[in-house]
Structures are given as C-alpha cells and as structure tokens.
Amino acid sequence: MMNENQRLEGQQIKEANPSDKKSDKDYSKFFETVYTPPSLKDAKKRGKEEVSYHKDFDIPEEFRGMGKGRKFYIRTYGCQMNEHDTEVMAGIFLNLGYEPTNTTEDADVILLNTCAIRENAENKVFGELGHLKPLKVEKPDLIIGVCGCMSQEESVVNKILKTYNQVDMIFGTHNIHRLPHILNEAYMSKEMVVEVWSKEGDVIENLPKVRRGNIKAWVNIMYGCDKFCTYCIVPFTRGKERSRRPEDIIQEVRQLAAQGYQEVTLLGQNVNAYGKDFTDIKFGLGELMEEMRKIDIPRVRFTTSHPRDFDDHLIEVLAKGGNLVEHIHLPVQSGSTDVLKIMARKYSREQYLELVRKIKAAIPDAVLTTDIIVGYPNETDEQFEETMSLYREVGFDTAYTFIYSPREGTPAAKMQDNVPMEVKKQRLQRLNSLVNEGSAEAMKKYLGEIVEVLVEGESKNNPDVMAGYTRKNKLVNFKAPKTAIGKLVKVRVTDARTWSLNGEMVDEMVEQLEAAEVN
Ligand code: 5AD
Ligand code: SF4
Image 1 (tube, rainbow, N blue to C red):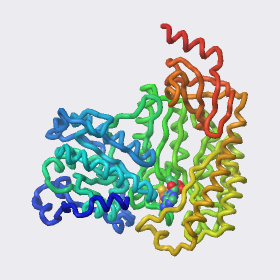
Image 2 (image 1 turned 120 degrees about the horizontal axis):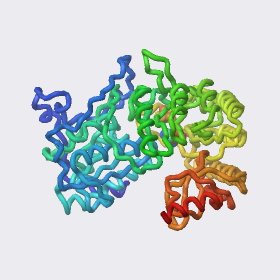
Image 3 (image 1 turned 90 degrees about the horizontal axis):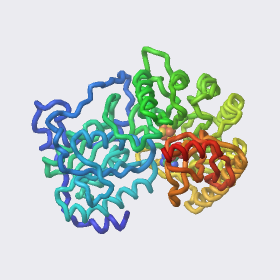
Image 4 (image 1 turned 180 degrees about the vertical axis):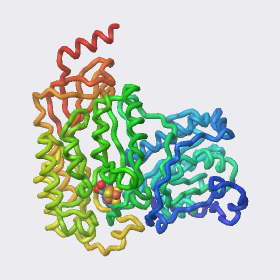
C-alpha cells in the first residue's frame, strides 16, 4: 500500500470540481450531480421517514446500446451481499448491451466491488488499482470504477481523488441502480465521476440480475444495519435497516424454485431485524421462514444473525425443519460480557449461552458457527480466555476469526488501545487452533454416516471428483458422474478431514446417475 502511494506520487491530480458539476438545475435528481462525495456523518443519521419502494426500475431507452461492442469485468471483494450486488450490476451491464469477460485485459469497463470491513480488505483494493494503472495507460478509453462499501467512506474517496487518477468513476452501495447514468457520465466527462449517496431509505425492486449459477441463489431480504456495534463500519456503508416486502421475497424464491434452484440463502446484515421497519404489518423473520417452508425448494438458509434479535418464534419455526436447514451462523464476537458491552452488542455472555441453550433444546442437531474478533481495544488476557471458554462451551463447528481492525468514523477507532499487535496475533493463533480442533472433531462425527449432498460441481483439484455441501454446510468430495451436478445425492462418509469430508455415493444413486449419463 505504502509502496503504491510512493509509486504514484507526483502524478497529476485529476480532482473533480464540485462547482462546475451542478450546472444544469433543470435536470431531475438523477442528473443533478456527478460529484456527490460520501459523508460518514450523514450516513450515521437515522431518520423516521418511511422506506419507499420503487418497483418501476427500467434501463433508460437512450442507454440501451451503450455497451454494444464493449465488455465488462467485475471483481468482487467481501461478503455475500457484495457478491449479490455484483449479480445485479452484471444484470444491468447485460441490459446495456455489454458482454462479460473474465480478464481485465479484455475489458472496456472494470469495476472493483469493494469491502470496507477491515483494513486488509481495503489494502487489497488499493493494490489492485495500482496493478490496473498500466492497463489504463495502454488503453485510455478503459473505464475503471470503484463501488461497494469502500466508496461510502470519505477518506477512501479523497485518497482515490488525490492519488489514483486511473479511476474514472466511484459510486456507492445505494447507487447501484444508477449505474447506466454513472457510466454515461464517465464516458462524457474528463473528470472522475463521484456519486455516493450517504443516506438512503429506499428499496429498489425488479433490478435485473444474472445469477452466478443455477443451483444456489442469494435473495436479499433486507438492507442496512441499525445496530452500530462500536467496531463496525457496516451501518455507515450500508445505511439504515430497510426490509423488502414479504410478497416480493416470496415471489422471488418461488420463481427460483420454479427455475430449478435447489437452495436459497436469505441475505441481510442483520436478518433478525427483518420486518422491524414495517409500520402496517407485524411480520418478522419467523413469519418469513414459515412462508419459506411452504415453497417447494429443498434448502433455505439465512445470514447473518444478530443474537439480540433472535426470537423464540423464529426458533419455533426453524425447529419444524423441512427445507429450513439446521445450521445457524450466530456471530458472538467475544465471550466476555465486559467486552460485549464496549462493543455495544447489547447481550451478555450469559444471554448468548441462554440463546444457544434454547436453540439446542428446540433443534437438537443444530450446528452453530460464529464470528469472533480478538484484540479489541484493551481486551485483557482474562477476557480473551472467556472467549476461549465460551467457544468450548457452545461447541461451535467452526468460526471466522479476526483481529480487530480500527475503522475510521466508528466509536472504537477513537479508543486508546493498550494491546500490542504481537499479543493480538498470539490470541488469534490460539483461537484458531481451538477452531481447527473443534472442526476436526465435528467432522469425525460423520464417519460412516450417510449425508445428503447438494452437488455443485467438480472439485478444484480433480475433475472426476464432485464437490458439494450438506444441509449443515459441510463440504463433501466424492466420485460421481457429471450428471450428479445440481442434484441432491446420498453419500456415505469414508474420511473426515479438518475442513471437509470424503465419501462414496450410495449404490442406487450411482446407478440412476450413470443411467442418466448414458441416455
Ligand atoms: N475488525 C475486525 N473484524 C470485524 N468484523 C466487523 N468489523 C470488524 C473490525 N472492525 C467482523 C465481525 C463480523 C464479521 C463480518 O467481520 O466478526 O461479524
Ligand atoms: Fe456490523 Fe453486524 Fe454489528 Fe451490524 S450487527 S453493526 S453489520 S457487526
């Protein structure tokens, strides 16, 4: 990163001048600005105004041929929400007449859909922008865009404006539907086009999307987060909580089922707050999952949960099983009540354990996974040990673990921190050993068992071996004909590794699939 800055030092700075951007006041809201930088202060505000739903999205006629003879490339960083946003942007590109390409060299438009959750995620993007610089020199008509969560940060936008003049456009997470206009501006303008809305209360329906595969699909159920955990940038980059209407979600999932999809994952930053913003109906995640059970699709998952809003009704519904899988990702972040308090998680260690007890009582074979942050400002050894002991006590199958990374604008970033990085790294290492041990142990329980696997495709290293996931999200590798792809098959587990299982497909299934291959 530092090298990157040094290398680019002294370049001509191509800074947008706000004053000559607001020239035409007759333009609608959509055309008014090409320089709308983000403001974390505005992003923090949570107004009382109701969410407006727009169901009339369309690609403007005048832009439809824009992509003719041009190719687009999108690189996605970060979470599933971003992956899904990329599917939407790809849908818009196709509707504009662009073709997809999977190499940057071949592309006429390159988009980096970025993640702001930790500093190293951001560094990767700045590094990539550096790599793209020569391409831009070679091909001056190339459009390079930065979108996603990093675009919502003032410091990032200022840094790009100053140092990365290979970038042609920056737009935010609330402006995705504006891609045709922003692209058009980028082609017309010599300046960097910056359009980042910091405060947005809208839900835009019927955006086009090209899904990455035809087996599993992501479905947004809500946007934004109002929790404001003290370390987290997400409430700033993704705005206030807005739920999609149940009927729109149900219709989308029904359609996916009709198209033959086998699994959907309902997405939101804090899915347990689903429906809290409705003023006319009482309809939460429990009610939504009840509706999902009625849809003829084999598997339904959701992510990510916040323990605070995980209510009894939801547990009751999940316990009915059916297509609702028995895997729950339930980020705990820390096992210490004191640390949880400073994180503003709004639950204690005991309350989390009580929730786990309730879930296990209702769903005895539930698999729990979690997220944990170590090295929070001033985290003591004892507090870290509480995280270790909670991990053992819950018996998580696995976890995503992180060293705390200060995010500018969040309350935690202003805290004094007396924990040296060396200590944080040691804690992470110890926690990771425990996570590995726990995962290996969880995997061993499957030895000799027959599991249901949704076959996703060939394994990375061997085209004769197929790979897929169980309901509880365990990766399974096994020999099978290609006709198995996209199907739910039964596999006997013969070997348990730390992160995956190996197995053999049970006989009758092999025969059926081989017959399908011959036909
Ligand atoms: N530093 C480290 N980890 C973080 N996460 C969120 N913000 C930060 C941060 N500032 C982790 C949390 C969250 C996951 C998606 O990323 O564990 O659940
Ligand atoms: Fe961030 Fe999740 Fe907390 Fe929301 S609930 S602030 S997304 S960690």
